[in-house]
Length: 204
Image (cartoon, helix red, strand yellow):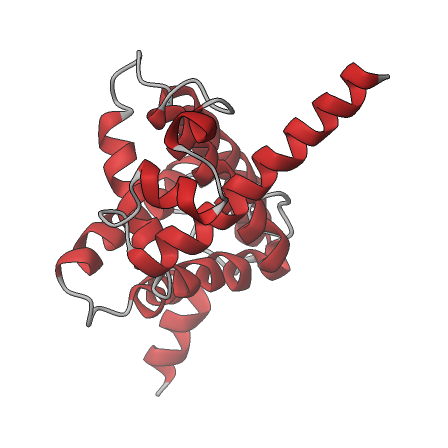
């Protein structure tokens, strides 16, 4: 029983670390979120903080997982379901929210580059995240195509990769030019791929 209680406390502390880390990085930015800063936020030493994670890289990877979990709850159903009615709203909502937490965008973008190395702790996270996002998009985009609300000139799987590439690429551009409206740009892509939008324009 003592071991079970100790394990539960460890899980709870790990969750506290990740939740506080989201706040620190969102507030201080990626550069300001050192292990020491994160440890101070939860009343631990640096060694005490890393006791809950194998390395600094794993810590930051788990912070990104926690961000996805929080975003998924706030902007449901993305990226956990393929409801075409709310695909656009959820996806664009997350992108709009990202502009409010630049530190987390910086962390995601930097980790994405480093995680190209198969040995990096975040490599599996990014592969799984991309796969899950595309599965959601393929199902929802396919349904929109069947309804005639999305072009079928390109298959749904390719469109899913295009949306992923655009959203990730917009984050890089936005970090260089914060005046860029990422959400509006991605929303415009949905409009551009909707045959009804083109038809309405030609009827004017």
